Image (cartoon, rainbow, N blue to C red; front, side):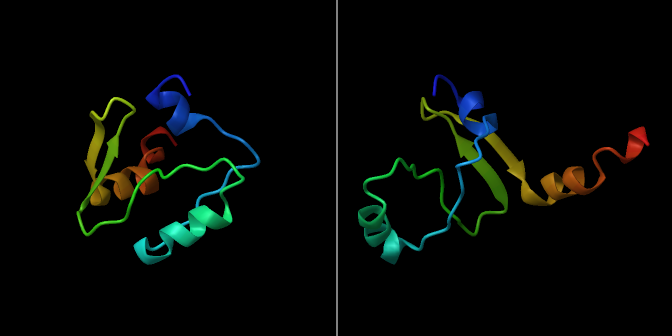
Length: 79
């Protein structure tokens, strides 16, 4: 991918996201070693969603509470 936005917003019918615990990471990578895959993040106890871009700069840092409100109510003002 050429930039952060292509990674975040490009779509493909063959992609899927899985959550793997740290203790199973090596086994997962070995199992899928012949396939293309990428580690895209990790779950933490932080209340914010943080996205670090290709250049290791933070490109998103937003409260998950605020994000949920926008997700649930974002278009109500238009309808």
